[in-house]
Amino acid sequence: MQNQFQVRKEMCDIGYRIWLRGYCAGNEGNHSVRIAEDRVLCTPTGVSKGFLTPDQITVVDMDGNQIDQHNPMKRTSEVLLHLQIYKARPDVRAVVHSHPPHATAFAMANIPIPEGIHPEAEVFLGKVPLTAYTTPSYKELGESVVAVMNQDTNSVMLGNHGSVCFDRTLMGAYYKLEILDAYCRILLLTRQLGRINQLTQPEIIELLKVKEKFGLSDQRLACAARGCVGADNEPFLATFEPRTRTVCACGEDGRIEKDPAAMSEGDFESLVQQVTDQIMAGVQS
Image (tube, rainbow, N blue to C red; front, top):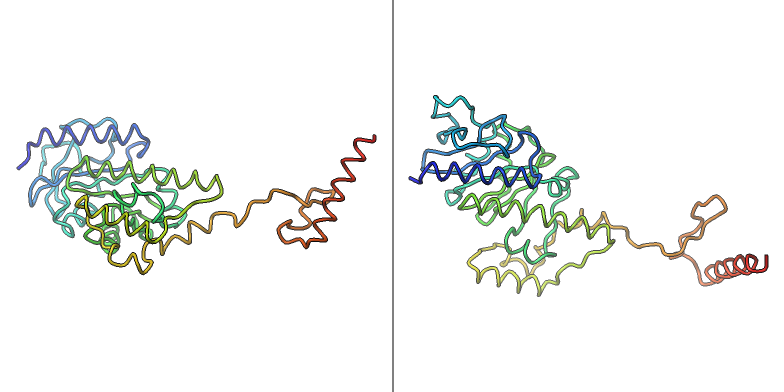
């Protein structure tokens, strides 16, 4: 069994980092650490993750029953989500549920987080599944997560809700959270730029081979040559404008009369002549 005080202290430190980065407002979010086969430490309900103290951390069994009855704090109601992940993946020893703003925006829009774009995201996150919305605190939330994850999954987006990241260590799960929100922030910035460059199929395969050399398995390597990576990217790519207008063929009321990209050569020459005439009229006056 791990030193409980050290684990509790680390849970408080991680909670402060989560709060400081704005991944959870108010008393949102929760995280846990599995300290034995039938014991889990989890954050209490109703307390900001930025102001946790070791004595507030609660202890539950694998059915969600709170063991430390002397503790005035009550365990988070969403611990049921954590427990279902632990049961489905015995290798997981820590779970962090949070509401990182940039990543949660994708969950709110029901847009899967795209793949095959950013090397670090591919190596450290891999495919991030998106679940349908399920009421928080209900057992169905955990069931929806378990249904979409596999042995390589370490992060899942919860429809209209937030994210859940898990790993062998609490720090590892927290790192996944940081990388997830940073990646989504980058994706949203590329949308402002109006374009995004996707990795080619050979580049993706090579990247997944590098990931494998790091000791990080990824089931997508077996199907990457068949185009499985990025197969769900269309909802995000559809948010980009098909082209950027650089010339506006506008009427007197300012409305676009014709899309310049759809003009014939004669129409375009006519437009150029109109602009030239207007400039010359202004010079002469």
